[in-house]
Amino acid sequence: MIKIINKKLLNKIYRQIKNYKTIVILRHVGADPDAICSSFALRDSIKLTFPDKNVYAGGVGVAKFKKYGNLDKIDYEKINDCLLIVLDVPNMSRIDGIDNLKYKEILKIDHHPKLDISASVEWVDENKSSTCQMVCELILNTKLKLDKSIASNLFLGIVSDSERFSLKNTTVETFETVINLLKVSNIDFTSLYEKLYSRPFTEYKFIAYITNNLIIDKNHFGYIKISDDVLKEYKVDVATPSNLINNYNFIDDLLVWCFITEDIKNNQYKISIRSRGPIINEIASRYNGGGHKYASGAKIKEMQDVDNLINELSKACLNYENKEN
Ligand code: AMP
Image (cartoon, rainbow, N blue to C red):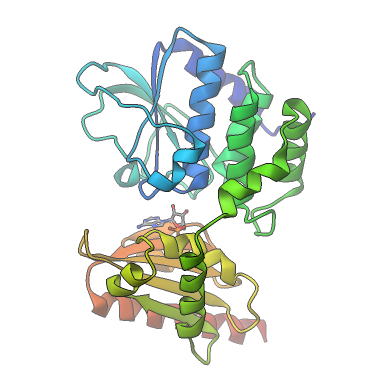
């Protein structure tokens, strides 16, 4: 069996879930496969284990993630005193769908650095590859049940957030968890990759656009400002650049890179940042953002602040290189 650091905590989480008749599961705004798949997997596992419970996975729907499952319509008027489970999100302001929800307690499971959510039971571990890895460990080590569809979502969330086991957040424990998941569920995992990676040809042309227009400065910092017109030209949405930014993980000339995407609907710039050395989440947090040490994001209103961020990230590269050499 996998080596579990805190079996007691997992049992405590299981007991808390068991105690509630109504459970709402929410994750971060701007959902990604880890957030989506962890909430569907945990919802479906709780429903499978306790068929009499009312369990809902909420948040704003994303059309391209429909292939992982369906979100639930939550009647906020009718729900009282539920257990709110928050997955893959460290701060209250980024919980998608929490407004007007009447909950009694919060259970939190997350792999981001801890911020302002205070939960009665919480499992926060920055060393986990993904929230899906944590939900998987929870299910495999308690009486929560698993079926093939739940296992498939967990596998996809882990693969996606670890970028196919290539990012620094991948550990021996990640592989152990996945091996156990595959052994127990017997899913046909190679056929699942298509769900994560198949995309229209226009998106490949958009990747070429980014590659051709990425500016790389002398400090090995790369950035691109992507206008709404360009998004329209390539028929991609404002979230697409964030989904593509890991494609640039293994480029020798890049230490930190940042995609700045115009989001006209919200009158702001959506920022995605990745790093192969300097810690970037502290910088992102000064620009209405945050995230992991080497994978962060932000939302910025003014172009002047975008330019300040660009300067700070470039300086971080310079300082890092000076320290390393
Ligand atoms: P992304 O580049 O959108 O994939 O985001 C990378 C990481 O940064 C994820 O862990 C996000 O949850 C986090 N993140 C993205 N945008 C923000 C933001 N505006 N505020 C805080 N964290 C963010």
